[in-house]
Picture 1 (cartoon, rainbow, N blue to C red):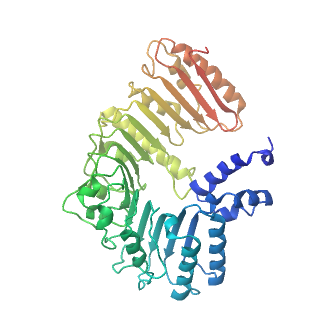
Picture 2 (cartoon, one colour):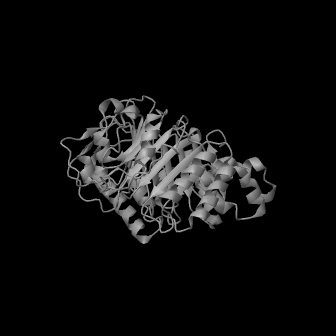
Picture 3 (tube, helix red, strand yellow):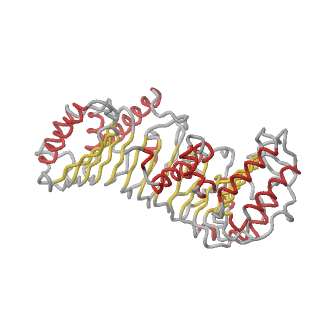
Length: 458
């Protein structure tokens, strides 16, 4: 089907995913063609993100014109407002900046602000916005404040924060990437509607305990906080947690014994972990990348779902350095399983690492006979027709005696012969498992699509 014949509703879904979920500016998409421009101008949601940026080098009249056009395209939808101040612009002084705020409030009143993100990386004198910002932030659901780590003075938008807080909006998400609580946030801490908190670890330690009890999701950033030494670790509530820039220092500052779902990302050179990370109630664990040290640091006996993701660095996930790292991580996992040092025995595993071989995969997964669901993402170097195929066909000693579903995503770009051989192997695997719980095998390839086989269609 030619792209131009797609219904406008489908185009709308595609554009919304690209602009809203991935962050591609709608203004750039509108430049692709007249057809796209016509479609995008008819979708106000795509223009709902509004940035007021003091760092730009464009003259104030250009910035003002762009702001007015975006707000008019957004019509009456709720807005996601982002205000950035990293340094003084050559073009913009406080009078110009106030004009931007006046235009923003006139065409997009604060009653329509759904989210507000303030990035103050420069300790300027606060703007006086009492006369500019009228009304209440009645639709505000997300408030995120970012200050530089060294910043001790209030940012130039402290007046804006104060007005937003005293409007007592029904927030769902509060983000504080600051080293000091910016202002008196007591009205927000008393709200039971806030279920998500994100911020730096030091700020997390300043939060009142009553506020933490209502949280269902916590996202912590351990960067820029290595010098912070609390008296005791701060306990996370029973929630889903995401910890970025995880390090040995973080183990000593965060108590995660109540966490049920945990996603951890860590730099490759994170240092040596000396203390164990106790996770007695953890149900789901996601490691990205699969860092060898963490595989022996975690004590998580109740984990049911485990996901090991490939290493990423600078947006390039297929460098030789990353492949070597994944090999090291898998070898470390095999070594620890042999020594019985790991306490993780999941029933659902997703593996998305690079350069994995059939021997490595088999030896690693043989240690988990309790597996019921297996999902693997492989690259073109994986060879499934040697020991892998032989082991799968073994009916006397099944590789996965409890496996119910298997999903494989294979990166065999143009090798149709290998794809056809895999289909034959999948049938043989299913026949060999006819007396076992295995119900379905699904495999996917970007060139050949999705195919599956079940016990019912054998």
